[in-house]
Structure formats: C-alpha cells, structure tokens
Image (cartoon, rainbow, N blue to C red):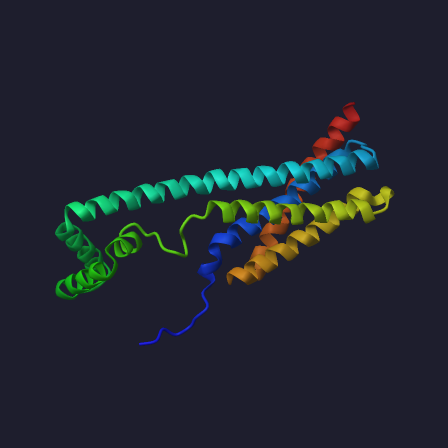
Length: 230
C-alpha cells in the first residue's frame, strides 16, 4: 500500500507559532517603544537609538525565552518517554493491554484493538506508546533550538520595519508615520499568518490590528504624559 501525499497545516505549527509571535512582538514592541519616546519629545537620534536597542534586546529575549520554555517541554517529553521505556521492559503484557484500551476508547472492538496493539508493539513498541498514550509525535515534538532561532529572526525582521519607518519618515510626522506603517505591517502579518496556517484571514487581521493599535496608543499616551511632566 502506498500512502497518498497530503498537505496539512498542522505540520507547520512548530515554527509557525514562533515566527508569528516573534514578528508580531517585534513590530509591536519596537513601534510602541518608538512612539513612547517620540511622544515624550525625544530627538530623532534618541528615537532611533531606542528602536535599535529594543530590536537587539527583544530578539535576545525572545530567543532565550523560547529556548527555555520549549526546553522545559522537551525535558518533560524525554522524562515521559524514558519512563515508558522502563514500563515496557518491566511489563510488556500490561502495556499491550493499556494500548488496546486506548484503541477501544477510540472506537475499535476489543478483539481488533488487541490485535492492533500487538502488531504495533511488535513493529515499534515505544513509538506506539509515545504517539498514542503520551500524545507525542514528530509533528508536535518540542524543538528548542528551532523555536529560539525562529523567534529571534522573526522578531528582528518585525522590529526592523518600524525602524525603517523612522529612517524614511519626515521628522514632523514621525509618530504618525510609524503608527500607520506599523498597523499596516501588523495587518499584513496577521493575514499572512492566517493564510499559512489555514485560518480565517479577516478575523486574524482584525484581531492583530486592534490589539496593536491599543498597545501603541497606551504607550504613546504614557510617553506624552511623562514628556509633559518633565
């Protein structure tokens, strides 16, 4: 028998989540930082320095955070797989019955479930238990380095967009230009992320644009408040 080649969006979930999160955070945090400094009557040079600093610090923070977080998931998965190997070596029969019970819960009758469990365990016992008992598969397995690199790169790319607006925009309309450009970038990112993941593009675009506008407005308000006070 030959398996039919199919494309599934779930195969992208590992890198897509980190990429969308990183790029979105890069645009939003850098744009908000720029608007906050600009609203506090910062000079063009200080605004640019703040933006570049936000890019570097944010990229490193995203990489470190993703690596630590996903590494914790990977450690838990490794511990569960190790425990499962030990249980298989101590009680093969019990583990076979446990696997058969899982298949019964999914709709197979007892005899067929028992045969399926025996055949799968004869082929790859730890693989069967890892996939069907623990819920760990090649698609969903934790990949710390991939997540860290994806987040850092996507954050840097996202953060570079508001910085580009700072460089190109006239000083007299810098804040307005950065805000407008960043909202367009966020809307585009929401649409691309939804398209890549097979989700509703309009809903994703509205969601990311709304929260982006709210975050930038709050940061600009705080910057204006402190700028006036000082």
